[in-house]
Length: 104
Image (cartoon, rainbow, N blue to C red; front, side, top):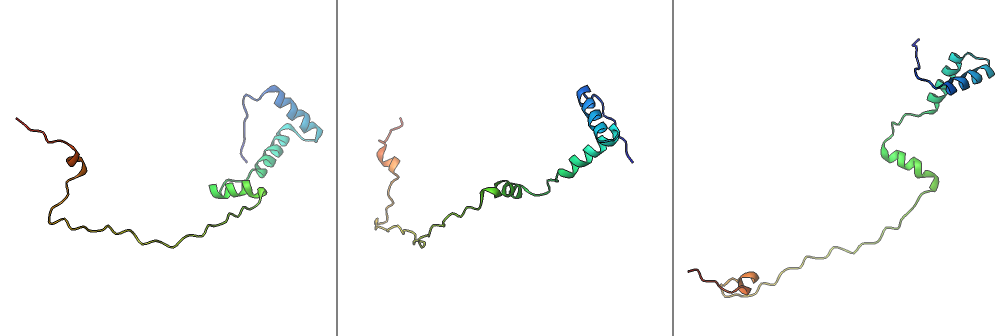
């Protein structure tokens, strides 16, 4: 068996432990063992993932079913119209709007 030493225990906590142990007919050491066993038996390990913990938390609220909207069929992409340019390419919009500058 292992031993455990608890340092810096408040006097009030020690007094309440002594009174509780006496009321149950146990030693302080035996009462502390019972308290630790009970506390650790209640604590469940957090082995589940985040999603499971969220489901557990919100389960008492009930299930929510949201309607799924119907989708339209996929449309064909727009094809650009090809105009006859007579072999010339149009100038970019920024070049056509800017006045020509002469270097000198």
